[in-house]
Image (cartoon, rainbow, N blue to C red):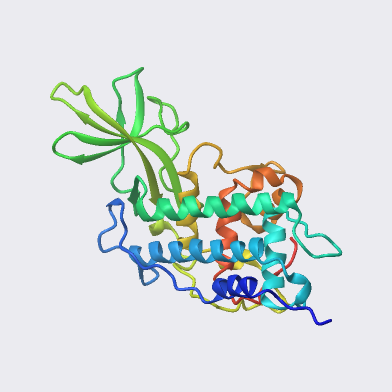
Length: 314
């Protein structure tokens, strides 16, 4: 008897490919971003591309999670390629004979979907302050424990944003980590928006997520990735490390704002950045890969590639 794919599953799969991206104005407070461009793209272009990546990635993971019919498809068809790509980034292992996801795999992909949802919500309406370079920041003393901190004086009404992450707030005279460096395209810090009185005492304080894009120091990565591009590789396998972008970096930084646990994980003594480390993390410590920002960045960037692009193991 001929096997038939249920209509609902077909519709779920089609939704992953008939994707209409969101286009929106940046909802966050921004500083040093007015008129800024990077490789011909505005900050709004980069923001919208990050949002499109996240939404497209979420739909592809959802399709694999809820339309388990890889047994009806040839290995190089789009759905099978998506399932294979997900396997490398999040350690899923479909049942060898039925080619269906195990209950543990389904739970893992539910976590991935939920985390993309959180990132999309943060992109659309989160409590984020965005800087497009490090020009606004000065190293200033604070009033407590003779410490210094990177500080941005927002206005003449004595409003400040101070970064308070470990490594940023240090005793005066100690070596401080620069806001931007030549090996960093972006960074995220938890900060305080403070209002002080005439005596310099803080009278109001709010916690804010601060993302700094260091666009002026970089020329290697593209600003955005267009939909359905085909990686220019000599073999059938694409290399995700060839397609990093400023938009992907912004998405990576967004994951850092989602709460405790979304820090950069360490594998083999290095942060789990880039494809080889992300794959190694997923194959050996799946629970950590489910909360590693670069696994989400890599999958989102490669979700912009042609749907039949397959990635090889690192």
